[in-house]
Image 1 (tube, helix red, strand yellow):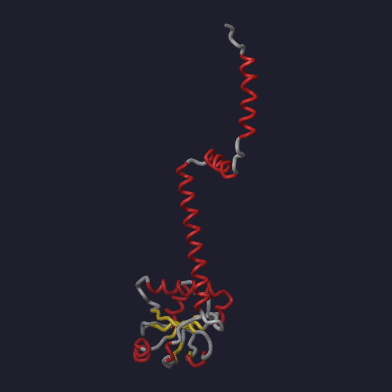
Image 2 (image 1 turned 180 degrees about the vertical axis):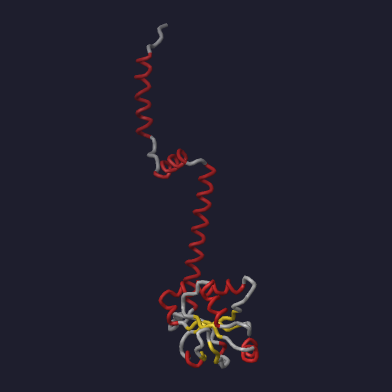
Length: 196
């Protein structure tokens, strides 16, 4: 018996291969994408990326849901005010009339109708909370941008021994560049305001 030569075997196999590839279903784009994905990224990285993508999609869904829910629950004719703060529940603010670090008499009445930021600071404070309060004021002023000039910034002294010199040093050392009135006074003037 004679053995077929390799050229006859390969030519006989070629029509079968050609018919197999022509009759096979086309490869889907998803399968192509998976093949490329697997070639460049291993399964562990793919798993992490897929997880992160799913968490991001869930997070965006939650944010979208909250936005829609907030829009639906807010009355139609209301919108948030540009500068928000505490209204003191309709209770009038205590009468404050003290001298600031420059010697000017400052009264809350003169700022009626304007937004006011009022904080309590000790210019000689040995603790970290006073510089942190100053940093919070700076951050707030920066966040407000141009609107910071529309705000009245008041710091009520928590220490009756504060002086214009210590108040100015505190302002300078804490890089307070916006106009802050550091209100100073003796114990008998400050104590009732602390309790108000």
